[in-house]
Image (cartoon, rainbow, N blue to C red; front, side):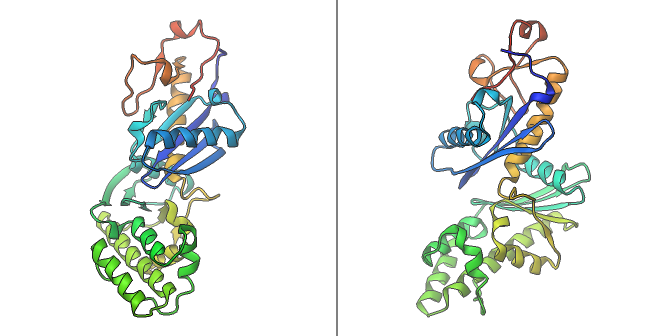
Length: 311
């Protein structure tokens, strides 16, 4: 093992969501070195392990080269090789503030919930609201509607933009909303008008949630919906304002990027204090907690030739 400095560190952030598991690798300068995305499936730990393997392969490095691993998302506690776990709200706030210091209101439309977050000038969460009670208010509703129409998820946005007369989908219950979709299809309504109607309905619910935290510009959108131009347009019309989107395709990776940023902050502090960052798999006597890490006193680390974390 070799002694590692803050200039050498590589930090992985992994966001285990209900639909997709995302990962971002950054260096000490907070520059993105690699990214990876996989479907989450029904085994969060396996999805996290697989996406981490993809991440280091995309970066062209061995797993042992990664100094610190931070997780977020609903499956963040299920990753055995993590050093720390952080809430999605904090990760989205930090990542968005990193890109856009002037943002005060963030919207994230996920597969199982919608998050509206208000932050301060330091990127700290000041208020939030979640809509996780019904699928009609989440991205899962759009995916289900797309399946009825024979579309893949990636086709939703471009397809909906072809709409000329979007139909209204007024039900706030997923079951009744699906019935509306089926009835519209049976009535001969153009599929693109149904898809756009579903997007407008979801966008309206999302903006109502934003109003509950207190609308304060600038506004930003995070999550997979940043890849859906029809949803971005619908939200902007409802807001009457523009939405800022994370650059370089990092919208869907926003939570993972935030986890990596916070992990880098923690790892830098530990190394500056002369403490060793130990692999979680080699420290069974310590149970990770929120913002916990496996560390060794300087005296213990002195005999080690390398201070790294392995997957």
